[in-house]
Length: 197
Image (tube, rainbow, N blue to C red; front, side):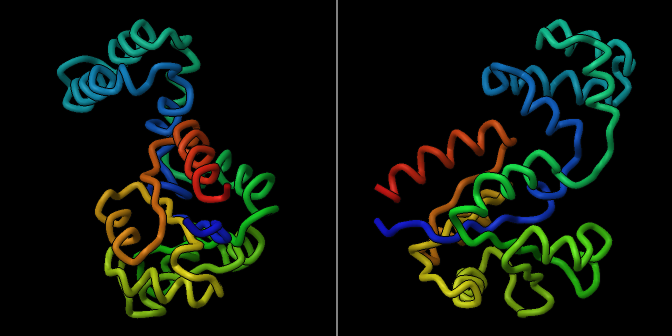
């Protein structure tokens, strides 16, 4: 296997997230084991089968998280995934080229990451409208790697969409499906150890 030189991040669902689900993924110790039950409680509250208060109490009981912390964590809306962006800046960017790649239209990205933020956080930021190439088309990943100056075998895609991960793998990249920062760190550590040794 080739040495990884670049890590590419999807925007929506990875770098820009709904904070409620992200809070649970990153703070419930046994999230993988409890995922189905957590989802069922959230659905019940979303469909008004139970009150939001009852939903928070059930989640607190299930996850052993303090009810007030849980309520605050779930109440936050959409926004930048700051813990992930900080991890990228303090750990990954020291060793790898880092890019953001999103399927979106002209000018849309400015609402979420300003041009200045994109320049500060990433070596390259590309939206599909600029290239005419859309994930999961393997050509989109090949083009992005060329822009980064790395071979596809030297790049890894992080995306919350399984189809986009498959498209990256078809192009020759390694891929990790994003499922919270805790999961990502474990998966990255494992994959980078496999490819960089």
